[in-house]
Image (cartoon, rainbow over all chains, first blue to last red; front, top):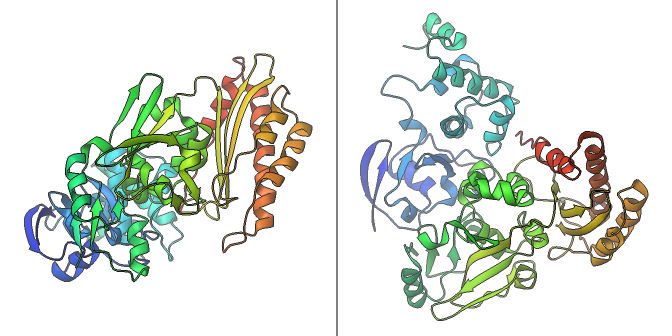
Length: 171
Length: 306
């Protein structure tokens, strides 16, 4: 079955079984391996993608459901070589340890900031409550989202992002 | 390979069901797709309701709110009418799953899955919700209480789907309460939950009360004896202690991997006692009689930290 949808900004058409999990399609067909598989049953959030801007779980979606939708994976968040402010903030705040949960965390955070550009820490925790991290204890992840929100609201005043720019970690 | 049919209207849906009568129907997929993964039985096709426009709206019909069955939990949470008229349902939705689960899962799915721990079921029960069932040929309406007959079992017949849930705007109740006990704050299946609607007189006498517990019986548990005990009385610790004893007799919990039956029984009573602490919160805080507890409950932080 031919399925047409928009993937990371590009019109895409793929022939695949309609009951194939979106997670498998993205990883195997498109080699977009930033989308991970953890529990496979909707409890860990590492397979998070954005569907028409909303964070959803690609392990619980079938390829047929993609038809006509706009999909963003972690690979589609940066603007060319320029990282998204959330990606910069995760690097700057040390919010990444093993990295397995990071794509899902960042996509969930971007969906959160879309609806709530200036969330409280509690709202950040709630927004990320469908994403498990077993390394960081979440503090630095919350810090990163807070800092990214600041950077996105006031692009010139984010100390964390300025600091890593200064150190040359980011172009 | 299974077909995945995504009809865009009820008319298309009926022809899909005619073409594939054995196909399971799903909305968000958060229950069915997990189940199918572990279930080896072969289904010829799946029918998804996510694009059936008629099933995804909330509208006011006289003194009722009509909620399309395939409306996602997130959409309900963002609908000011739900928060404004049915805060007991809103509070339950806030504790359901996680943000992505709420972006996918639907109220109709939560009802048809008929889990004893379904988070929308206790609030919908105290609200006397009715379910609207339709097939290609007929339609019928029945109380939610009668629709769910056991864990995972409903009166849905072959070729029939749940199209909507209808709820009266509960103007007769000034307090709405929901609390869920789980092992974590998010992504937690309820160990026990309680939904309550209460009306008190200006003098503080309980005039009407509706209570429903989740996760402590094969379906939602109601306790007319507890309600009868409370009506005509004023909130006091002694009254609630008595009510809690009756509540513990009314529930029929089981042991499972999340909690023991004894613990669930204890917590079922304890949730009622907490109702009293919210009430005293009202007594301290408000000049507007009943509004205080309401405000307290709505302002209680719903922490969902990971």
